[in-house]
Amino acid sequence: MTTEENLLRKVSVGWTPQVLQAMQELLDGGSKIAITAHRSPDGDAVGSVLGLFHLFAAQGLKASVVLPDRFAAFLDWMPGAASIRFHSEEPEATEEIIGTADVLFCLDYNAPDRAGSLAEVIRTCSAKRIMIDHHRDPDAFAELMVSDPLCGSTCELICDWALSSGCWSDMTLEAAQCLYTGIVTDTGSFRFPSVTGHTHAVIAALLDLGLNHAEVHEATFDDQSLSRVQLHGFALSERLKIWEEAGIGVIALGLNDLERFNYVSGDTEGLVNRILGIRGVQMAIFMRESDPGKVKMSLRSKGMVDVQALASAHFSGGGHTNAAGGVLLGLSLADAKAQVDAVLENWIIEQR
Image (tube, rainbow, N blue to C red; front, side, top):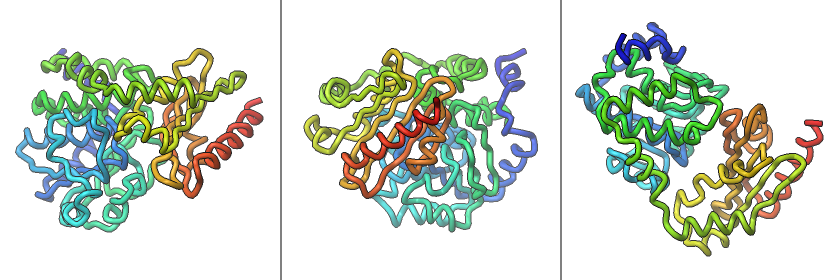
């Protein structure tokens, strides 16, 4: 049995023959393809849009990739990144791309609002929308929806599509690099419970294509500026609050803190996982003042601690059981910290 045949037995439950046929019919029915992902794109978002972009290119299909805003600089190396268009920089041009598309792929988000400034054009466009995502509780906004919350990343779902649709032979090295990056970043380098044997089997199949995982890891994780390393050190030494008995760690950084270390987008990536790596910590929260009156949040946890429920109920966010995001609007950083403290105090009482 070939690697492809062995993998095909365990592909995501979302890729049924009926879904595969429906997706192919939508692709056959239109010549203009647009691919989108969520705002503040992470490795899985960028990896999935570029991975699908390269797969389509290998099949002779032309697609345009549009993102709400720019991603962190440490992902700039990814093949095809220079071809991505950003709504934050070209609003009219990018809205025209989506508005005139026949087929619109919605990757790594489960509701139009997750696409930020692109939400309205995604809702109102005439394109047939195909959602491929792994977050819980999706909105019914797309004509075709592939949702698997048990899957560790959208990039793994894209790999499963390539396997189950018979187009694995179109998996170029460029596509493999992008999809591997999305899998490794969204699984916390394979540390989260969503990682399965199938995840590792998919990685093995990508490696069999000639993927150099060491080069990808170095480009993604080992190219940090000195100021970024210093920012992380400052955050951990000066801004970390530990709720020792509850096993909670919180870091909050203000605009002044970020300016002090010449912050650029992506510099705080991974900081929340550093908190979670502290012995005894079961829940980690990172808060960053992105603009006056706007505080972005990243939440991570271990085991059965459900940060998705916490983010959804209190921080206008969502995600997964062990990894979620949120935002607090109209509050100073001090007020946001006070609100988070109050939420955590109530949460601790509820857990007793």
